[in-house]
Amino acid sequence: MFHLSPSILAADTANLAAAVRAVETGGADSLHIDIMDGHYVANYAFSPKTVADLRRVTRLPLHVHLEVSNPDAVLSLFAAADMLIVQEDTAPDLAATIAAIRRLGCAVGVAVNRNRSVAALSPLLPQVDLLLVMAVEPGFGGQPFDARVLDKVRWLQQQRTSLGARFAIGLDGGVTTTTIAPALAAGADFFAVGSAAFAGDIAHAVRQLRMSQPERILNSNSPSP
Image 1 (tube, helix red, strand yellow):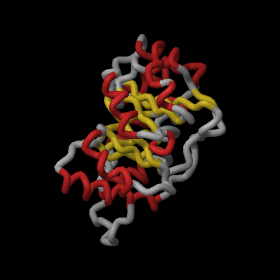
Image 2 (cartoon, helix red, strand yellow; image 1 turned 180 degrees about the vertical axis):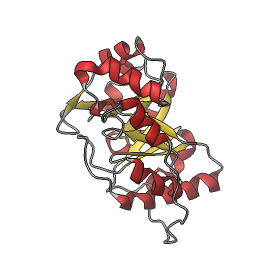
Image 3 (cartoon, helix red, strand yellow; image 1 turned 90 degrees about the vertical axis):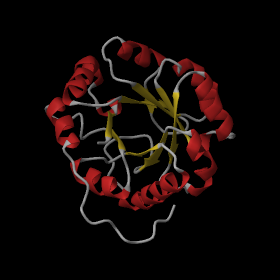
């Protein structure tokens, strides 16, 4: 079983409550809420009020993804979330940021962009609940999945096994019923899903994603982080 976290960035925000209830009906495990400040990425999205309002309309855990230039300055604003996810390249002292998130009582996620190495994060892996690999450039939905990031997933899976750690390995961006299968085979077990979840009959779309199965044959190439 894997974790599905529909990203409301792809939802019709004029009908957000209905869209959220639909993904819940379809079997989503959590909601992914992108926070964008117009600096780290050239886009704006959502606020602490969005998180508070969503609390009133869903029982799903709320995962806040801080795609902002200075996450340490705003962590406390989003303390109502169940998980806070920070971009590793925005935290000057990532260990301190992780500790600050823990003090707020939130689970910890760390996201790494597709053009950055995950190897530097190895010492911190046992301290996180989710390591989220970006399969697109952060900032905008609807981008195609970059299959090269599956090497990062395979490397993380090897690290998780060797460390005896329990962190989830996630992918964010371009996730569809087609791309979930090879990602599962590589070792991913958490998916932030945008356009593929909020398309047509939303509940049905989520159910279709849930039915994805891993590919039977793994890529035998050595993974590169």
